[in-house]
View 1 (cartoon, rainbow, N blue to C red):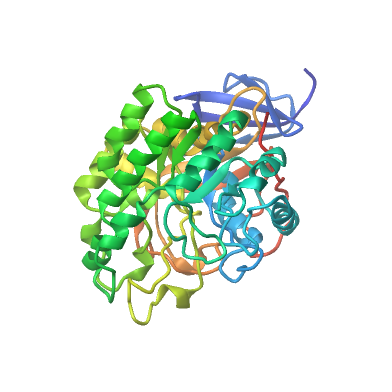
View 2: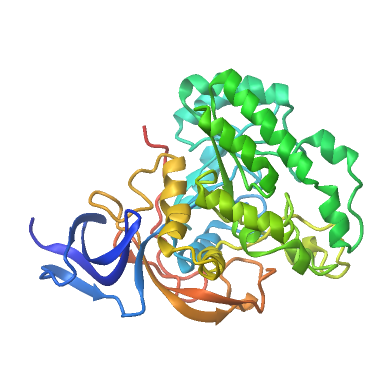
Length: 450
């Protein structure tokens, strides 16, 4: 086959759900051969992983809020994608809010792509948005290559991205089903939320009561009905309520195109450990109790949940109400793009869950969700997106060393296990170890694959 550009040799590598020794050959940014670990390299460059490192496929994070343009002081493509690369994420999909304009038209998608083009250190795809007034834009956005469409069933938190009613969502799904398009939904029922006591002040218990599990459970049940009625593909975003899992499982058993994801904060944190006034922990839906967390892990291992993604939703420190600790007023979102793998691995290791399963949930699962068959795996023909991961190395989270724009995190001071030591994007090392806002941005802008 001729000389290779790169060979990466690893005594341990995660390949198609198994772990074994391998020599990975790369040419023109693509994996072209998998050989025995001690095979002659025949490459311009050979990298041998250390004995304590495991070679992983690059992670794929399909739930990231980058906020540029319009709210770049919250986050931007250069900082978010540097954080991604530092955390082993080589592909992400940007949510259609909280940027201004939101990605609800082809023109707005063009603006978003222009903002991302020069600043992306990893590959970036885009979701389109569903809002009450843009149903006539959905086909055009689909043709323009968005990975799918996001909708909220209750207020999103920003006025330029209004939520839809169940009836409006039904109409959108009827339009999108013939296209085979994927619709991803923030599933909390507005009526349930409206009848719950509003969150005020520093009480986390009060905030938790304001977003009851019933809101998720009822919304998920309605989504299953809509998927059945329309034949559309529906994906439940950031599921935090384990009592919604039976409805998802039943839909899948019925053969409906219904999938669901969860996030590192729901798998690694619990309501019992959130102090009053600790607004960096605020997210919507909320972090729930330990028993609920255990059931989410069961849902993952049983295959009901197929993806673990960050829901990276940063903001400026003032919006977190750090001075007042008011959960009612604080922005709801957790910035964790850089920490996702060690967060999940730390908890998985404690539960004797193998690394191969974690990689499936954080690499191939999200890639398959959005149709990126060349991502999230180490296989011939796949992109040479690779990660050298030290699964036994501990570290303490230091907020000011995180690459995302604003150093606000509920994980500050937390001891985690698992360090991303190197990341390759299409066979080229990323620049995540250099000074911030430096280095060549090599990320590509992705479109949905036919």
